[in-house]
Image (cartoon, rainbow, N blue to C red; front, side, top):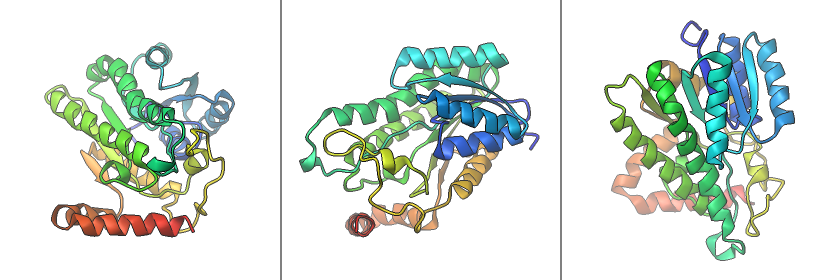
Length: 269
């Protein structure tokens, strides 16, 4: 509880899902929240939840794919609360289409700009303030950032890029007091797949899978993220099955490919 009291935390993708749940829990622990996403109406709802939980919050409508918008987000955080202690790069969009089905190649650009460059932009602008407070950068990645997944090629690419960036940044920041935590959830029961980009580059609007079936619930995911933040852990792979898969990928990569293909195929039925 004490670890987050009075700390200023910027959360991107705060309008729903993991970002919303994390913001509300942090507010309950006394943090000051800077809530960023494109949907201002949804952010205002999350702000009200944060304030009801006992925290302070400001809303900053932000398209993380715009570098200037990310600069403004950080400036607004400093203006409101005097600095930045934690940056949670959580904004993201996924896809649901095979590469040979894609009709609009711009979807790959959008995935990279939001998932990867958005995190780069926000982190770059926040770094001076994080250094001043010996702060923490959190990158909400995915197990897809560790291994390729069919129908998620562009998403996997953006998350692999995120991993490479934050692993490099972690080394650069040695001795500054700023730590980098990368968290890798698997399938979590959120609505992210409702807005997944289809082959035409447009949101599919409705997931082809019951997201409450067999997925980690959001509260469990958030609890793992919070523990990682408090311990300033280097990287968290969230499930035992995924940790085993990482080992298997080193010694029997073809087995991991088959397991991954079957998992996605089963979810699409």
